[in-house]
Length: 373
Image (cartoon, rainbow, N blue to C red; front, side, top):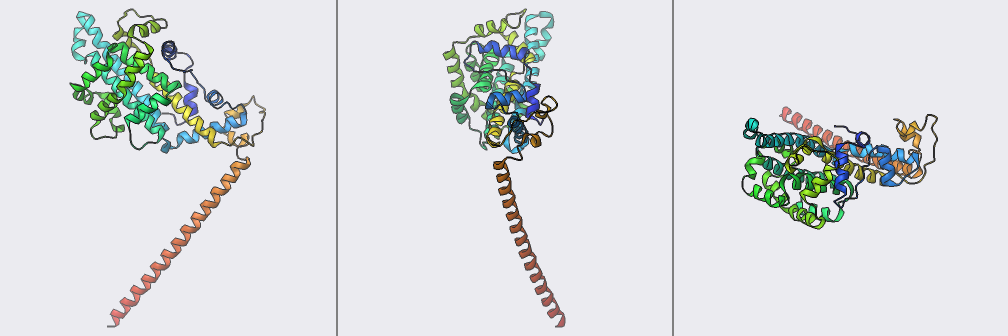
């Protein structure tokens, strides 16, 4: 996994099947998402900054923030990327199961693979849990609270985050499981859910991130907490498996119009969780970097090599970031505090050494006195 959020943005495709599917869904769901790609362009769009020097400084700060593991951003990206990789395997198994049902001579596939509905239910549940954990990582929450997550989902999820949740409902809920997907998954969790999920390779991969001894219980509770929001989303938008399939059909032509076949194919061929997940993480990192970098003290600079300074390893130096008075003042204050801490530590160390020497002399006098006796 890349440790450079700018590089991840630069690698995001501007047009592929994932992007086409998301734009198709955007026509029927309330998501103000745009496919924002490229590190520099993302910084300019999100912050509104046009000064190349300050854009470069924000870029460098983004890399520093993302590389700080305590911020949780790398963990969030790992979760989004991992669940999409697992999604490919789930889609392959689901497709094999459906092929086994349709074609008699390949019926053995139906016996070797779990039922497609079961696989899709597991996929949906695990994606919801991954979203909750990633959300908590980015918010630096020590306790994962599904109810708090749903509250934020209703009030603050926009852009890439809302597009991801809308796609989850459409592609992993409505298409493979039908309009009553919430009831079907709830029934699955209440009956064979524990055994099926705990036996899933996908569960084994993400289980370490679930902070509970009863991991299935946590998954079940998360789905139950989010289920009302998902049901309300479907009823308020009026989306159906048919409307979702119709929009996707404008992008990808399918030989078989069965919704479950379409869903299994999309599991194999798209990575919408990773794509929009990187965009969500990047937005938060960029906003934080924009707050950290001072607004004043940046002069417009013209590069002699077609503005290559924006991607140079010396961008900080060239941008004027180090020469900014406010930044230097903060650095001076931090250096002063560091010297104060070092001075205090040295004083305490000398005090400990003095005490140890005193105790050593005391032991030596006592030993000498005992030897004279």
